[in-house]
Length: 559
Image 1: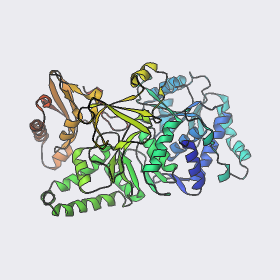
Image 2: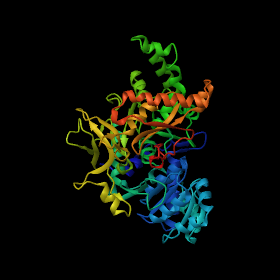
Image 3: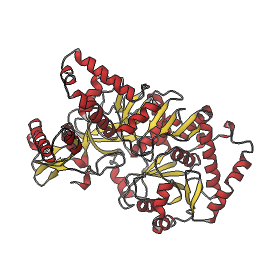
Image 4: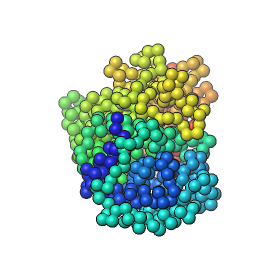
C-alpha cells in the first residue's frame, strides 16, 4: 500500500502546468498554482507555531480554495478537521474546542457567522496555543488569537521568497509521503453538527485514505486531464475522497459547483463541464427524473411504446441519448451514486436503457468505501461487492436469506471516535468487526443488498420487523409525492408524505383534491404489503423533511 500523500505528490509533479481545480464560472488553479498555495500555507503554519500532528479545522463552503486548504493541512502533516458548512457556528466552535484545534481555516460566510457571537471565538481559544482564524480566500488573517499569527502572515511572502527565490518549481515539491506512518491520524470527521455531547468525531488514519485511493485508482477508470463536476459536500467523506482526493491524485481537473444543485443549475453545469464521471446522491438523480424524464414516459405514446417489445428500445434509446447529452456526452465511467438507496423506478429505467451507472456503499468510519462494482458487472438494486481492501460479513445464520447487520474490518476502518471510548467500544463487535448499523443480504455472487438501517426498523406488536425504506420507495413513485417517511406510532404504521402542490396546481387540481388522491394511492399500496406492514393512515405535509448534508432525512425528528 502506498501512502496517499505520495500519490498526490506524484500527481502534482506530473501535471504541473495542467488545470487542477476551478470554481465553476470563476478562478482556475493549475497544479503548480495549487502547490504554491500549499507552500504558502506551510510557511504560515510553521511561523504561527502549528506543529506536526496539530489539528487544523476547515469550515467553509465548497470551493477551489477549500481544496487548497485541505491539501495544505494534510501535506503539512497536520490533522484536518473539516466541518460541513451546514453546521451552525456555535457547534463548530464547541467541536473545534473539543477536538483541540490549533487553527481554523474558513471562508467569508463562516467567519461572519462565527464573529456574530464573541463566545464562539472564546470557545476556540480554550485550546492552549490556538493561533486564530485564517480566511481561505486569500490566506489572510481574519482573527489573531496570538501575535505570532499576524507576524506569520505579514512575513509570509518574505519567507516564501527566501525559500524559493526563483519561485516554486516542480523540483521543490516533496511532501515526503514515503516517510509517513500509515497508522498516524490524518483526519477527524464529525458525523453531525449539534454539540460535542452528541457528535462523534471519526478518527481516520492514513491507511484509511490510502486504501480508498488505491482502490479507486485500480477500479475506476480515469483519463489524465478528464473533468469532474463536484457538487457533493467536500467536508463529507464521499465527496472528499472521490471528488477531491481521487481525481486530483490522478491528474484530473475538478470543477467545483458553489451553492445548492437545483436540477436546472446542475444540468447546465454538467453540459458545460462534460465530466467523465459524476458522483451524486439518489435525491439529485430522482429530482432530475421527476422533472425531466417521468413526465414524458408516463404520457402517450411513450407510456404505450415502453410496454411493446422492440418499440420500447426506440423510446429507451431516445431517453438515454437525451440524458447523456444533458450530462455532457463525455461519460466513460458514468454515474456513481451513494449515500442512500436509489428509487427502484428510477433504477429500473436506468438499467433498461443500459445507462452507465453504479450504486456504491460506504460510511465515514471507512473513509468511506465498503462496496462497489464496475458498471459492466453491477447488479440492479445492489451496492456492488465488497471493496477489495475490506472484509465484509452479514451477522446472520444464513446471509443469503436471513437479514443481518453488515459488519466490516480492514485497513479502511477508523481507529475509533475522538475522546469517546464508550462510543468506540459500542461500534465494534467483541471479535473486532465494525458494526455499520445497516441490515443486508449477500447473493451467491457476493453482491450486497441493503434493506434498511437497524435503528429505523419498526418492530410490530407481533414481533415482525418492518424496514420503512422499502415502503417509502413505493410511496415516492406515486403521483404528486415529493418524498415520504414511514414511522411506527402506537399500534399503527403511518406514512408522512410531502405533497407537490405546485405540480398538482399546474394540472388543475386543488389542494384538497391532491391530498385526497395521495391518501387514496398510499392506502391502495396496502394490497402489495404484508399484513403486518400495512399503512394505517397518512399525514400530508407541505414542508420537506429536515435533511443531513448527504440529503438523508433526519428521521429522529419525526418519529
